[in-house]
Length: 161
Image: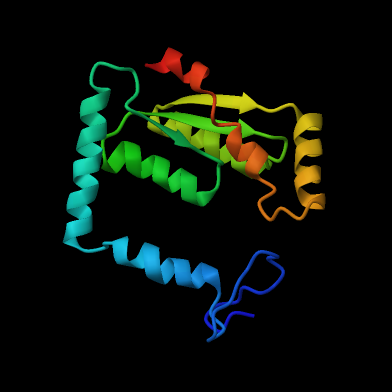
């Protein structure tokens, strides 16, 4: 078990340094934290990025795409993008057969309440089940990868330009 967090060898790819700190913690401290600016400089960087997105999206129906699961993180980010940042997102959802009714209700309430457009990609359930089972049996720790990759359809997004 990591001497810094609760991660352990149930993650078959985890590595520990000589002090017992896992590679997840080391990545956070070495790469994420130095670039995580929660002060005024981070707010300025974020505003510059948002302005660039708004500028690139002028004249288009949408200026960005936001993936939404219906959970609290993606729901809050969708709200922030629309209400706080003034973005015009197309909300994208992948239904891979695992949606809870709560998630579906959250998506509907948020989309309706914010007046956003939703595009849902419904994945063939038997195919997704087989892919995730194959990932699980092979020891791949990220069995959601097939679902995550369902969001990458370059030809489909051309119609949203």
